[in-house]
Length: 428
Length: 169
Image (cartoon, rainbow over all chains, first blue to last red; front, top):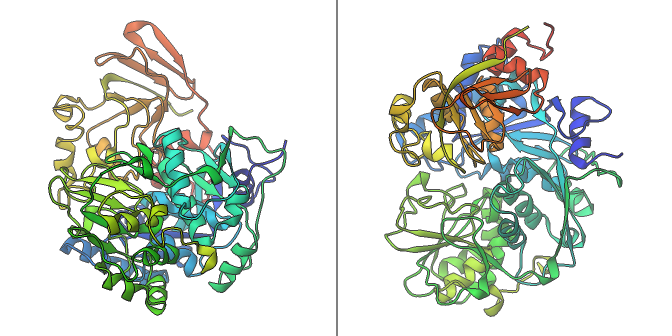
């Protein structure tokens, strides 16, 4: 019996000929990431461990993204400690405004196909878009990684999801995941590695592939893995990554489950207030007013998301009474959006574009608080009640296309019904 | 041979308990762990922390510790004196954090286990007994390395003893 992609990746890094789902392995980490919401804990664990040296700390990126810029003295002090740590241990530092960890990791050339990447964040599954096993860990793990270069992992059971056909214009990877959340429920694939295959995955650009893997965190996935292709190699080369060493699953691998989704039939999806798995098609939502529109986060703050928003809003105005904030996922994306005139078009349309970071996602920076009974439509990955700082506000989720279309009309809107809402990345 | 058994009174919690919301400072910036421990799980079980007696076991529903799961949640659970958590399933990040901090987490069917019951858990022997009900449930095998990390009280003390990750005992 052959091996799944997850089993092969973990066998490689554990130095074993094979591993099977359920095995416990101690594996060599290719590169690690620590962000500012977890760094103070990681530094405490390093102190607790009392290791004489941290020989692998130079294979970590320390990213100041969650509190960017810092809203409290405590956060600012945490940033100071991170800068000091990175300086002392030769870690790569990404300072405020440089971008979200899951964007700067691949953009910075820190990972390639076949790697094992761990990060102090659930959405570390994003790296699977590049055929790397990416998964979330915490401070204790990362202190052990810096001291020993290794992490313990249970080899996950895998599920294979075939996305056949092709996403239609106006429909994005975000809609695939929202559809799956509706089908399986939040954490419905808890602890599984998801292998996405099929013609619709091949047709996706890298930005959308990153969304697909990133958002698998809400399904509870331990990893979300894609096979590498020419698009992957070209992107990695352009970003200075090491030579790819891709792996693929064996034809006779064992999967815990196999699902098939006809991407061609999928419509834009939205998650209704408070639950990531209360899913309906956007066109089924009638007369739902919105007050606040957000585009950004590690799920949908990439260049194609901003291009899509501009395709809808260029030369127009957001609806009366709607506020819109756009947060590019990284400085590189911000710069590219500026050079393409997207920032200008969106600013003219009434949106505010803020410095790169996690700001749009969660209320920890306290600058996106909705008023009582206000409705937010966001391209983020989570919409728990109170996530933006007000329990009496509702947060809905959709793709950047759906958010832009909704900002334009003032109501939850299927992007396919507005001009520019069927913009396609491959035509860029 | 290390002792992998433990015993304690049951305190019940329901499904989908998010430890970031109920047992961490994520939404309580500036509050210390003692403060958070004193009101932990209040929103899902009012007065839980004041009822809970150190050395007892939390028996919860599915997906205990879902989502991002701050490691701090486990530090607070240990501060409260939680001896173990039994649930049909855990959020994967919570599960890691618990083992890395020496808190036994046991995947097991919890139907029929009520608040006030007494549990005897034998991880190496792979069984869970509800002593007052004469009920015995089988447990899955726990890899030796996990038992060793738990026995040492977590990953950091484990690595102090076994810096190359090799269990020699």
